[in-house]
Length: 408
Image (cartoon, rainbow, N blue to C red):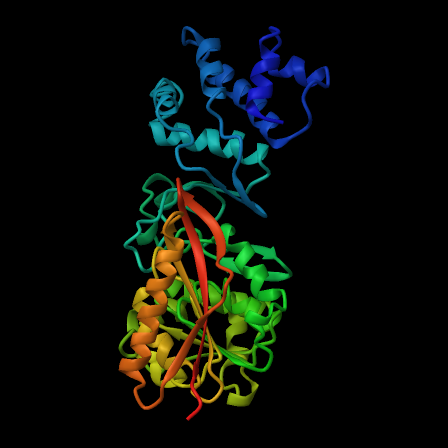
């Protein structure tokens, strides 16, 4: 059922309530949103002229899809803009003290109940140059978001009440704070590939380095489904580290928070300590042989001594390009067994093979430069994984390279 279907039916001269009562419309959140929206505006715009045409115009712009994670709903970028702001202005000062207050009333009493949500936010694109992958969401309504967040949406600066969203995907739990970190639903195919027992991802009893761990997108599949013995997960963003910690606890993964650089990243560790769940204490002081995950907060370059020459798999999951991690990945590979590099890049669809050749050359040259004591072979897998589209002709792809020292 689509918005176009509803608009087509309305050409018959029937309003939403009549269509719904005649069973011409299914019982869906989108229908509920349309009906509740019409009733709310009819009630609040009693003195305005041209009410019906205005309401029709607003309903025609309602979002027809959104991301939903339990009670948290993330609306698409561009929702409730332009004419909505003008319409909310009509309610000031007769009904509300300001446009934001009018909007808050609508989101709380119309959108949230219609979509069965307890938190609503508006999606905004993440700048390509933001290595911390901080979300640019606009909070619209939330039981754990106070007025400071809702009426002054500068999400990266807000540190009041923290709301943690969670989702279960492929039998794994992921936890994140929408005002501070993101959840990428689009990389589910790559998570499934890691979990599928594909020979390229055979990590049973092996060591994995996840150079850009995030909230555990690929870390958890390696541990739970691919059977990794130990994963080193590096992450810059302290809020993502918190999500990684909570996800590890939720997935019953014994972990260690590497604190060797606690003084260097004191601000991050303060945030982590302040907001860590109480269950974290149970993981303090684990014996090295009992841990499955080592979380490395801060710049991944600092932690190279921990995982140098130890890994059979290195995941480089930063987009639009993970090129900054190439030198670390090369140094992380175990010289005895060799290992796979899983390199994520964004690329134009007509340049995939060209970029693949360039990546192979870069990796080979880095082995020559950084590990000259041995001659290394860099063998690409024939298949190039296309994870998702990032726009017209731009794709997120993964190159799998097997790197191993040649026999003497």
